[in-house]
Image (cartoon, rainbow, N blue to C red):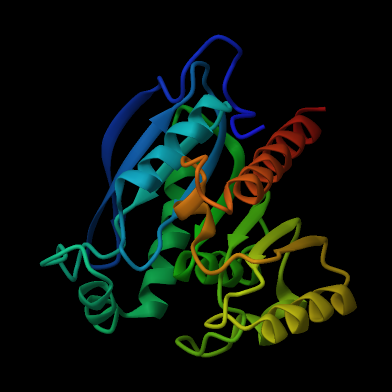
Length: 254
């Protein structure tokens, strides 16, 4: 159940990888790229959380590559530098120095970069986590050419740009898959319900799932650890994610 992208008899995630740089305004953003067995292939942009690039998001990219996608996870904190220590306090202090609107611009440039590669097709999806989930929602409102968006515990009421994702719901393009734990007080389930209602009113194709008993960051905490209480829900959410990207790729080909 937890590895729908893994062919029977293989171990995740035995794929080719590469280091790349993406030209953005005022600099070159480094990125980790995982490659499927066959190309050209659809692409997925992986947008990290407040800790930036980490082994977990490289694993996510590898797993997407095993599912048949070119997956890239950029380090959007490249201007702010590496964390002095891998703690939440250090991560939050660095995040305060981040120009969030410019980061959204950087991720939009990363979509163009992915689409322009020789080993990709014109289909590019996004998946983001925490603040990366917020960025995915903002990109869904900015661009009409995103094939599918997956938001893990993003913040619908985030105020770090000129408009909250909630306010931009009528401009968003689906399909959007949203995944939260109901104990995520930072995000606020009322905000998630408001976004759900706003997208429904606007006729935006979307599907939200709220998992009981789970808090923020449940995929990172549980996807690879069968002993955690959230393992089953994390696996289910990941299965939904792979299914969405696969269905979209198949539909576009047909």
